[in-house]
Amino acid sequence: MSSTHSPESACIIGAGPAGLIAAEVLAQAGVVVDVYDAMPSAGRKLLRAGIGGLNISHAEPLPRFISRYAERATHMTPLLESFGPEQLLAWVHGLDIETFVGSSQRIFPRDKKAAPLLRAWLQRLRGLGVKFQMRWRWLGWQDSALLFETPEGQRTIESPCTLLALGGASWPQLGSDGRWWPLLQAQNVPLAPLRPSNCGFQVAWSPYFREHFARQPVKAVRARLPDGDWHQAELMVTPEGIEGGLIYALSAPLRETIAQQGHATLWLDLNPGREASQLRERLSQAQGSRSLSKHLKDKAGIDGLKAALLREVLSAEQMRDPALLAATIKQLPLQLGQPFDIKGAISSAGGVCFEALDERLMLRERPGVFVAGEMLDWEAPTGGYLLTGCFATGWKAGQGMLSWMNRDTGGHS
Image (cartoon, rainbow, N blue to C red):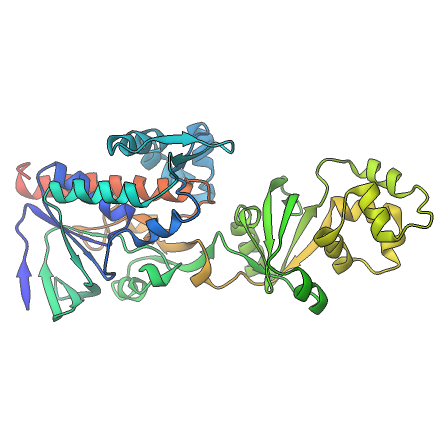
C-alpha cells in the first residue's frame, strides 16, 4: 500500500530528541509533520538516560563546551552556536520545566526526571498537529518512496522532504540498533564504522580480584593516558574490566589506541591528595609489628579495592619497596583490552560523515533527505554534551528542511 505526502509536508523517521525537535521546528512553521518510529512509544532512549538523573546540558563557557566534541568540533561549532546550551535551556523552560546547575556544572531538571519533560513535549507537538506512527520500521527506499514494515504489512510513503534521525547503535533494545547503516551504504552515502563510545574496557583481572572486587566503585581516583592530562571521577570495576564516568571521558582516545596497537595503558592515581614524595617518606617509616596492609592503610590511606589494584600489578616483593609502592600509587599502569560491546555503550561513534552533507545537513547524493542526531559521525563525553548535540543537529536539520521546502514551494510552506 502506498500514500503520498503533499509538498507542504515532511516525514521524520526516528522519535528521539533530534527527530522531535526537528518536527517542532517544522510544525511551528505550518508544515504537516508525520513522525515514524519502530518502537511502541517515542523518546525511549531519553527516558532511559533519565533513570540516573536527566543531564540536559553543561554550564561551562561555550568555547570549552564545543571543544568536548574533539575532532568534530569544527563541524559542530555552527550548530551549537545556533542551538547550544543556552537555547536548549530556554526551550526546556518553555515547557515549564525548572532546571538547576549541579556542583559539577551539569544541568538537570529540578526533579531530575525525563518523563515530565517528554510528556509536556509530546503534548506540545500533538497540539501543533504532529502525527505519530509507531511500530513503523524503515526499510530503506523502494524506487523514490520510503519503505516501511508496519503492523499491517509493508507500506510505501512518497515524501518530498525526509529526516533520518534513527540514532546510533547503542542500547538497541530502545530503538538505536544501527540497522540503517547498510541501507545508506547501499546508496553510496559516505559512512564511518559504528563504534562504542562512552564505554568500558576489558581488563585481564586475576581470578581472586574478579571474585572479591568486581562491581565495586573506585572513589577518589584520577586517570590519564600516558601523555594526557589527569581526569578525576569515579570508576567501576566489573568482572570483565572497568567502566564509569572516569573511563567514559577517555573512551575515544583509548578506543583509537587499542584499534591501532591492540591494547592501551591507563595510568591511575590512587591518592590524588598526596605527592609521590610524601607517600614515599611515609611508607619508608618503620613498619614495626604491623602487617603491610595495616601499614599501607595508616601511611597512605590505601586499603581494600585500591590495595588489591596494587597487588594486580606488583609482586609481593615489590609491594615491600616503599619507593616503588609510592610511585605505583601515584601512577598505577592498568593494561586495557578491547572496548565493551557497542550494545552496552552509552553512545556510539561513527555514522554518516559530515562530508556527505551540505550545510543544511541534507545528503548531497539524495536531495530532500536530511540526517540528524547520533546517526552523524560525532561523539562527545557524558555530561550533557550528547543530548545537546542531538538537539543542535535536529534543530539545524529542521531549519534546513524548511529552507529546502521553501525552495520547492516558492516560500509558501
